[in-house]
Length: 117
Image (cartoon, rainbow, N blue to C red; front, side, top):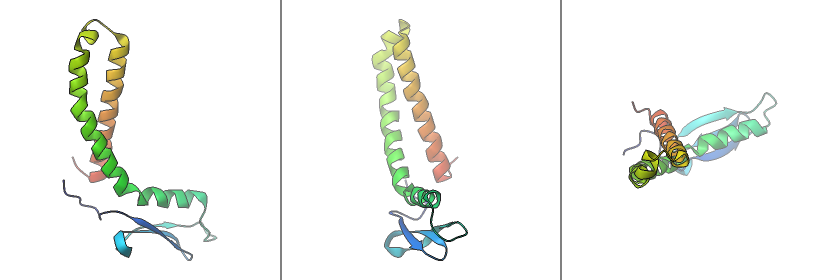
């Protein structure tokens, strides 16, 4: 999969006059600016927002690996648990439903992050 976004890692830089800047590798292009409150002192919320933005490429890579592992293993688990599911084992049904819901959520997050349809 090719990425359309600036490759990571993204870094944080504090600019006392504005707030935090998120830049690409090796002081690459500016990705985002998270402005500090009016007093120009970074507060916990602006720092947390900037850190979250800077972590985006790493989080996307990890969630893509998670999606692949879940997708690969869900069918296997379904096959393994088939007899228990047909016997109405509520615990097996519940656990498989939770994993399936997690996988769907991960796919939706990747779709949103990559702009895919």
